[in-house]
Length: 98
Image (cartoon, rainbow, N blue to C red; front, side, top):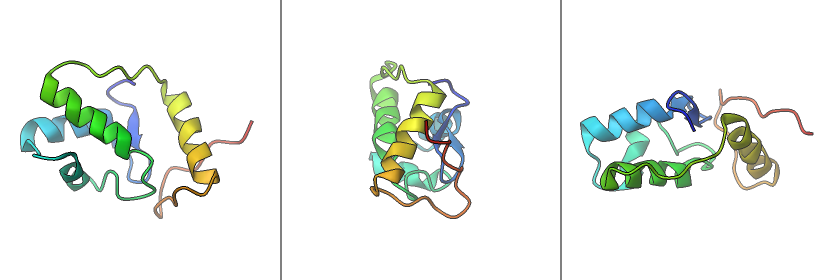
């Protein structure tokens, strides 16, 4: 994923914003990333990706995230449609089903 791709669709938080938050605030645990615009506190889909960003910052190595923004959005839509999470009010709408 690219720096300006959204990681948290519920609160419109990009990877760049998350990585800058981590760099500046140095959270001790991944859950503290929720202080960055509420990331991870909506439907829950982005939590594994927030953890990857946290690990990426700790190891100083890019964590392999070969997903495109479109693939990521479709996977989130499947997650929501399967009943595993409920988007926050004002969240990015789900893409059309294929």
